[in-house]
Each structure stands twice: as C-alpha cells, then as structure tokens.
Length: 220
Image 1 (cartoon, rainbow, N blue to C red):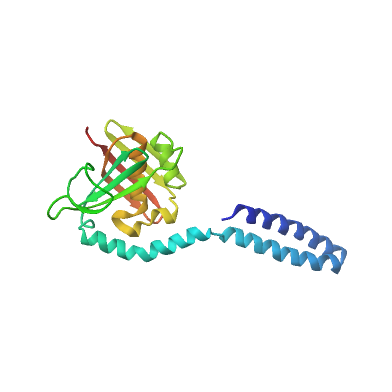
Image 2: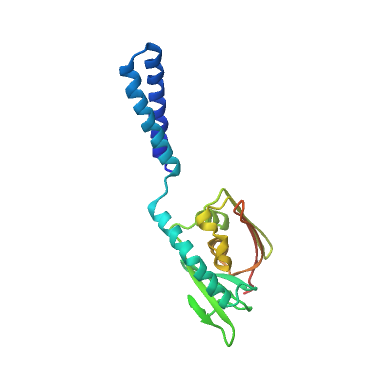
C-alpha cells in the first residue's frame, strides 16, 4: 500500500463527489460532467494506492519463488528436512546462523555449505545487522522481522520469541529449514542477547503467519 496515493484518492474522490452532488441537485451538467471525471480519477488513485507494491519487493518475491524449489532440494540433499540443529552466534555486526543434521557449534564455521566431518554437512548463513541496531531482543526482532506484534521473554537460560501477522515475503514457510522467519528470528534473539542460542522448539501457523520459537542459551 502507498499511503500518498490512498490519501490523494480519498481527497479527489471526496471533493469530486461533493461537486457531483451539487451539479446534480442544481442540474448543472457543466459541473456534474467534470465531477464524474474527477471521481473516476480519485477512485483510480485509491485503487492504485491500495494495491501498490514496490517494484524491488515484487522482484525479490519473484526471485524467492523461483529459488524456492532449489533451496528445498538442497536442504533435502543435506538431510535437513528430517531433523536438524539450528544455532545462531553473534559476532560483531552480524550473526552466523548454522543448520546441521547433527549437534554442532558455530566455532570454526564459515558462511556457505561445508562439512563438519564425514556425513556431517552444514549450512551457515551470515546475517548482517543494520546500523543503529537496538540492544534488546524485542526491539531487534521488530526491526528484522516486520509483523503485527513481536515479543521476546527470557526465563533463566530459556528464551521464547512470539510473532503474529508476519509479512508474507518474510514468512515464506514453504522454504522449510531456511524459511526467512526461522533464520531472522534466531538472528534477532542471538544478537539482542549477545549470546549463542540453540533452537529447542518451534510452532508455526502459516494461515495467520504466526510463529513461536523457544531457544536455549548455549553455555560458555
């Protein structure tokens, strides 16, 4: 949605509607005619504003959909679909999120595809943090994962993150283990705490784009 187009459409439609009513009551075609044209323009602006999407965002969504099957294929080949361990490790201005079918630590891992040993593959994604990143997990979660609501709660070494109404392009649950919502929530929690975390459990509701994840803070 583009707020400026919506506002313009409302103003133009409202003004044209008033002039149209005056023209019809006064039986003045010179007023009613242009008012009808103005009303059409206003409704067009309103429609465009409500359905407007940034071209870059639309292009990224198209790319995501095209790459989705390939990403799931790679995840399946690596054995990530059957079960895996996800960790997020903060480092300076970024977070390294790692996935492997076996238990592991982030130490010594580089971004990309690799192996921890024979039959122990891993995927590592480095997530850069934007300048001026909030120092608390809740604020960082709201920044990295656009949603209607987001919260983070910690009790001892257990951390729970909850979101609802996550934007569709960020949710993308069909991408499986590397769905953006899984990666970004883990990165936000780890960066906000300044500690390595391991995903202990999660629940997803794709229909409402809700997500709940429980993490355990890794011991030093």
